[in-house]
Amino acid sequence: MKTNRFVLIAVMIGMAMSVNAQETKESKYGADSVACVTNISMYREYFKQWEAAKYAPEAFSNEMVTAWREVFLNCPRASQLVYTNGEKIMDYFIRTRPNDKDAYIDTLCMLMDTRAQSFPTDPKTGASQVASIKGRKGMLIYTYNKGRYEEAYNVLKEAVALDPSQLQGAILDSYFKSTIDMVNNGKEEGMTVINVYQELSEVLDDNIKVLAESVVQLEEAKAAAEEGGDTDAVAGFDKQIEKNEKSINNNKVVKSNIDNLFQPFASCDDLIKVFSAKMAETPDDVNLLKRITTILDKKECTESKLFLDAAVKLNELEPSPEASYSLGIKFFKDKKYSDAATFFEQATKTENNDRKYRAYRNLGMCYENMGSLSRARDTYRRAAQIDPTNGEPYLLIGMLYAGSAKQFSGEIESGAVYWAAVDKCLKAKQIDPSCSEKANALIRAYSAAFPTMEKIFFNDYNEGQSFNVGGWIGETTTIRAKK
Image (cartoon, rainbow, N blue to C red; front, side, top):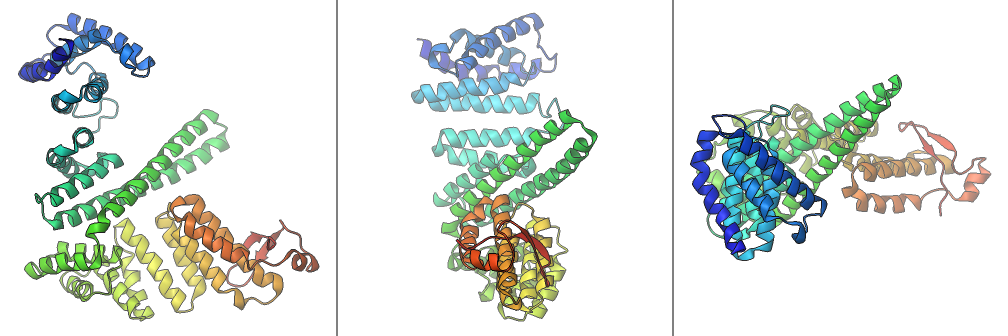
């Protein structure tokens, strides 16, 4: 009988929703504030005991649920804890009562909807949180029952349309997975996966950009606090910096996951087939042309005639940094590096941070192929400033250094170039663990070219000493012997 009693929670809450709407207009604590406060105190006490027991079944209390339900039904605006605690209660029911899982998922959905109505803005910050609540609702539906993917997809689509900046990476990941389910089950066309992929890639890039800029600002504020001797402020900045860096890594993980999920839809042949049909239907659709050139570039399908046609057409209809970037790719492939550099330079004016980074990176490659090594290095450094979490520019600088070793005469001088190159590779994997494999391979190759201990000794140097690499490199490094 007790199980049936709790299965009825969803039904009772549903019947009471109209009552909620009326009572939320009266006061924070509903029509009977004394009863509301009493029930809050009662359920919270039981909840704290359950929480302290790490949500163990034996510490779960029926009295807690009864009191919590009364608060939810009669004073839904009392506190956001009603909803965060309620999520944990529903999670417990979903996990421990699988036969009634969908009823509890329905109750959880009602819970999230009521929270969005009762607390559309965060009481602490005053910022809107409706998109965040809806996004979490969609993610939980998909997490608890993959068979309800269509419901989850529609909720998540609405959340992204409202404000994607409110959504955590896990929510975006669920949205993309549910999108794939929609396409695989014939409820959306293949183009939908491509559109959502691009949309979420841009959201994640923006998230990473904002967080990285915040880290720079926090580092500056921390330095000022250290100078002023404010240890409490320094500790606070360290905590926020750590939190932001963790968020950056989480966004990168989600971005990598989405890239992997997109692979079955992302072969050049498949993309060209889908995009060619769409371009034939609407050849003057600027947004489509941007999507074609962006995704074909990202998936390295730029050798196709479709990419060239889309790039030329886009430049005709709307000359822009985006169009210039695409033409730069075309000329780079044709080894017309001077022409490519002109277009990549124009492309750096874009507001899209990911495209700006790629424009500077490719511009550096143009200068490198043109033999202007110092200019290439400076451009790679600019790319690193645009995306300070990306290790690729440092790998490119390291390879640039190593490739110029023959320009330096002398056993130590030529070997020093490889020390500097390894420094860049170490920097790359320090800030971007995703490039560690490539960085380690380069480090092994360059370390093999270090001078021997004998050569270092007979040139009056010692391992561990600082050494200034001259010429166009002009960097200080550390002397290391070949092992």
